[in-house]
Length: 349
Image 1 (cartoon, rainbow, N blue to C red):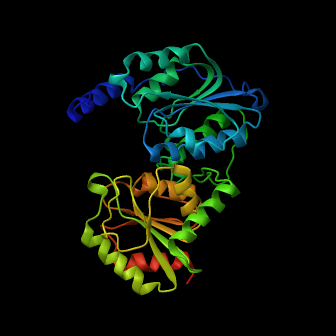
Image 2 (cartoon, rainbow, N blue to C red):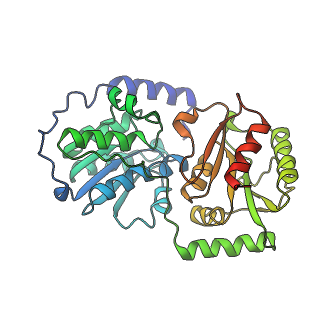
Image 3 (cartoon, rainbow, N blue to C red):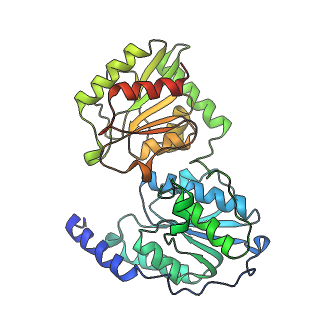
């Protein structure tokens, strides 16, 4: 049963009103009561099924591992995409997936919530401050230490990138721990990372070599996106032709989406895969990845490949690719000349 978008919007608004004050009355532990070596079981809550949102969870997972080296982590998520994303994270003890369509699996959905109450954690982190269910799950979980995801004005004053969806959970955790007497970490926030193995990257190179059959480096484009984030065929064909002109010493290849469509009408050598890790491994062997804001853009970033993300409707301050030379370009206020300049700088030409 597919729930109409209007009903979903009403449900979200009602849940947000009900849960917006959850956590504010939570009694914080006293200064000095948290000891790093005592944090053994951690729960991170992010009940969303989209690929991008699970990839954006990797920085807070890395932060927890770096901060609490003796811990094991449970992830409370939705759907199955977290399994391949965190496949090579040895510290992940358990992934608890909510069904992707709750109304079709109501008993399973309820059982997961009830099951959470039977577990005891040392620390619980809500990784999405805008998630009503995330706040509620954090509230009902059993733990002495809980990070609900509040907005802290004093952190915003220090970190201009505080609103980034992958970064603020890290900043919030660091601030929370500092209030309990743990020395605050001022290092860079971890980048997105699916921890590709050397074998995976080698297999990705073999696939890429079979596509291009030459020794030139490759620029990879991905022309699909959801809804208003998707640029037109004319827009992509104009950019593709310019890439061919500007970078004759590079292959221009296209990664195809699951729908097997191409905004440039399959003019470029292309590849297709349903395997998230295989997709990442192929991208890892390219020099740069170019796409609109979408989950595959974040996959490229998590493959540690320099990524150019085009933004027109979503906020780059929240979703921009970062690290490894990556950049977000707002196409409402920049031109193709700006894009080529940015790409050239990343390629180091």
